[in-house]
Length: 307
Image (cartoon, rainbow, N blue to C red):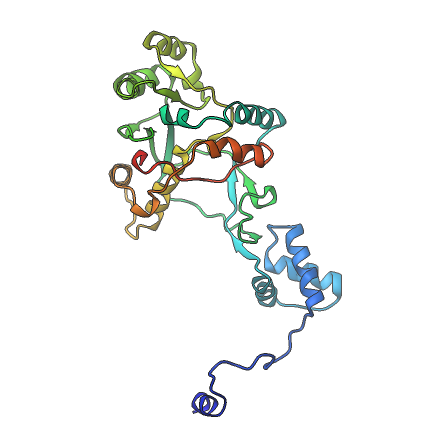
């Protein structure tokens, strides 16, 4: 009845602006709270409430802290995890980006390859960072972590401008001999030979850079694309793995075994969602690296048919 009376009297159903209890904090207090949250991006609302009480002498509950930060556009989100970069890593990444900044059609000949490990489950450490929209790749919003071994399936794949390779399952540790015998000979080299002028990209993992592997590439006349160390974020195939991982995580049916996970990986690799059939402008890899001062670059979709 109250809503109906409000509609008949005032022609509205929303609450009048300024009505209700007054906020405990002023606009100036809110700005100070935002500065506190941006100073320590990983601080929880309870920690911020304690810091606020120490700084102002006024008690404020954690839920009020969260509401104020949400009103200011700061939402707690999962941080972006990246490999730590040293000064030399950044220098070499920038050098590589400058060398390839003018590539256009050249990228159509590059075959990007990589291994990826998919776990049976993902443990969420419940660490969040407060950031505005578009701040995902800020250094203070990134938590560095090193990869660890948990139960799952390791796969190898490669994408080209208009094609993709078969998805291979890697059981156990991959060394240089197995890399040649199980990946390069049966799949990678035939895939490259089917693409005129193909250039092969791989990262600098030890099985990829061993002397026996280099000799194999020379014997097969495989042209390699030099690649800076610790730069998985610069390879479009990493986005393919990310899309597959996100689709697996959204599947309500739990994966019970590694074999079941492998079947799910094949299905999602061969049938990507149409919403992700975007287009990567490969020169953007170099330009993004330069614009971000050779730090981490944002993800981009590659050419539709590569997926």
